[in-house]
Length: 107
Length: 122
Image (cartoon, rainbow over all chains, first blue to last red; front, side, top):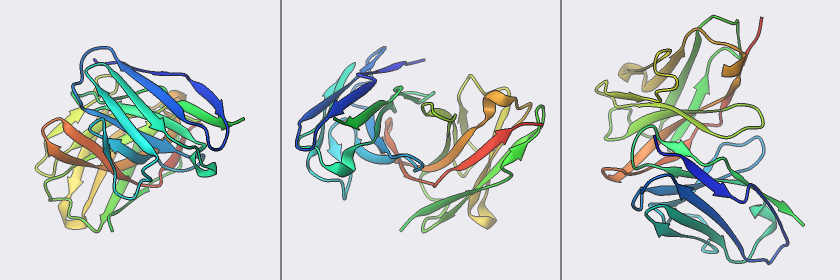
């Protein structure tokens, strides 16, 4: 099974900051990597699919990059509504696996 | 607009069976999409449970495979999850979602249902 590891597990930042979250796969997943945002008490929401494709309706300040085993999610200028937990997920093979999550908090 | 809605008992006794249904609106369960379940224990991360195609094909997480069954009801445009021999460790919010696919392996979960909390307790 493929394991997904995110870093950091938590992150404090301010509105307007540029933030990068990293996701590493235990083996190559090519570009089959998705990113989700989850706010407290809500379902996860798709942000990025196939490593770098922005889901319709998601602000352009969100971007994804990477391939193989190393991926990043970047928020170019944090907005108040971006404080949430972010998860990566590989779709290369079942069992699909999620990273443990990165909680983005207000500094 | 595609919407998914989970339903089922919020409390299940230990050793019992957890049964949930996901009603789909705005899309046909018989479309070219797969459908999936994900769970999240309180305060923890996301765990993939399994996926099903309307023709009955399934894939399960090996960690749960011996206890899980997914099924589809085309007449009601819904799919279901059964998890037997539950313990307190199965207490979680259970989400259903549609799997969108552009090419094999290039797939993602969207949209998700709002989730339903299932507590395993006597």
